[in-house]
Length: 284
Ligand code: AMP
Ligand code: ZN
Ligand code: FE
Ligand code: FE
Image (cartoon, rainbow, N blue to C red; front, top):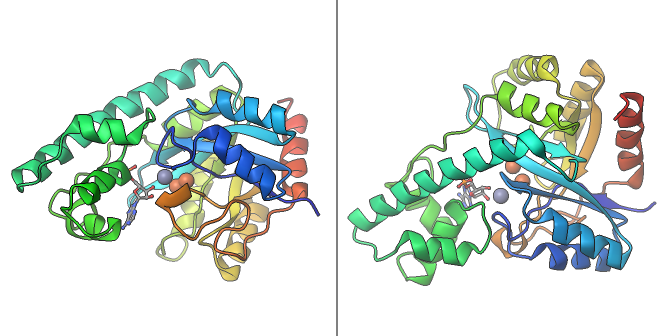
């Protein structure tokens, strides 16, 4: 069975491979298809698609949006985006503007704590247009203010850190609708990363389905076999398509390989074929 990976990040957001490098690695790994799903940007898609055409691997255009819930952030993937993202482009631009403001405030907090770092340095290191905490952590590391990225998050950037600031994200309804509007397959990403009160995820998914959710990410690097079963059961209950991917971030998430995750991930091409059939049935 040919294998695929429908969740990856490039330098356009907080991955470390250029889109062309990522697609080349996916090809080397023997994958038949890869979706590029950067946070809040589609800037890497053109290069990724060009590499895909040159190398003979199917590249699916995507992005990942963060949304809020009473139990923290939940992420939504848009898959099969059109070349012209129209109204979605405006939403993404607004989200990146919010990121910039937040990053500046975080840098100010770190400077007030005595760290010699600047927002320009963070932007330069990031290289892409969607900048976030992993980039700030890398600058802190490079400047010797922490000894590893984990320490940067634990002491400063993470939820209980001294320079923590929440991200202003979208309401789930806005995120789903922005993706529905451009004809994307709208997929709830890695739903099992955190534990929720019994029944909560099901109720949340029901709301997303009302807004226009059409798929759920069943297979993910951090999903256990029990998590996969729970997601399959949600998919059946709400008649959702099923998706899967590694959430590859290059060197920013060490140990995660394209198509393999931490080693056990395996997403067959039938998953992609099924998603395409569902799109065709919807006239997409
Ligand atoms: P942001 O989008 O700026 O809020 O940053 C979120 C990203 O930071 C996530 O995608 C993770 O990759 C990364 N991240 C969050 N918490 C940690 C942590 N404790 N250690 C390393 N990376 C983290
Ligand atoms: Zn990320
Ligand atoms: Fe995510
Ligand atoms: Fe992701």
